[in-house]
Image 1 (cartoon, helix red, strand yellow):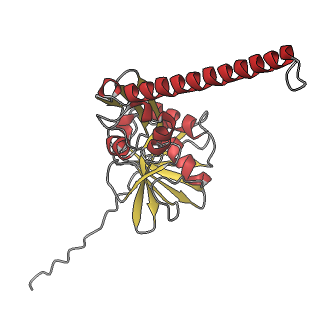
Image 2: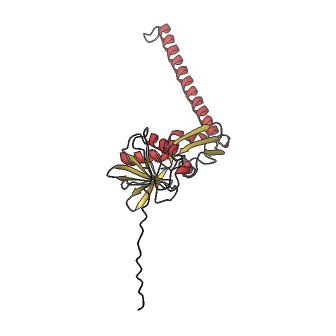
Image 3: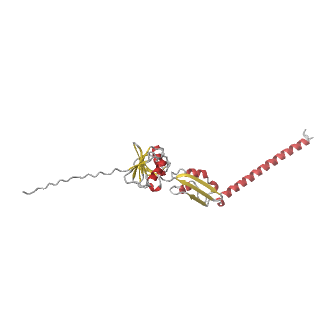
Length: 265
């Protein structure tokens, strides 16, 4: 026994200390190896092996999808791991023309972008200018003559990217959207004290209340396939019981001309 300590206890204490030191060394070696592996993985994914070399964009016509994708940092040569699809989709939906967007990261080097754009349906009155809108009232542009149909109803001062919430305007847009394409040339819809009115195919049309607008459009399209005399007024206030008022015949007035003859004496 040395210094009052049992040699067996001293030996056991050394063994415990050595075992603890070995465990700490193994942990340090393991952590170091893990750091090296992570570093190598990061280096590989940041290398040209996993750099974007293909970006395809489908469905973009009027929108600025390509520009938005670039400004979001998605370009050829960037590391594919740095592309955040959700963030790019959010930026794309900020474009007034884009209704829906999907971004797919296709390993190892491709990005696929799919967008669904709004379809312009009509121009709506906004002060001294016009708003180009979609069927559901999304404002796509201001002051541009992209489409023929006019909804001559004041929608307020709105900017592209905002949405019309006026029920009368939305009902008029529903009517326009339901008409066949061949009837949308020179089409206009307006509001009056009696309800909505329209001019379709050169005929005045009484629409009435803002209900059943799609059905009214379908009924009107069927009526216009018939031989309706010019100047007739079409009433589809009740789309199941439409009416056509023929133009009143013009009354011809005759004027008697009295001729005085003067005889010479």
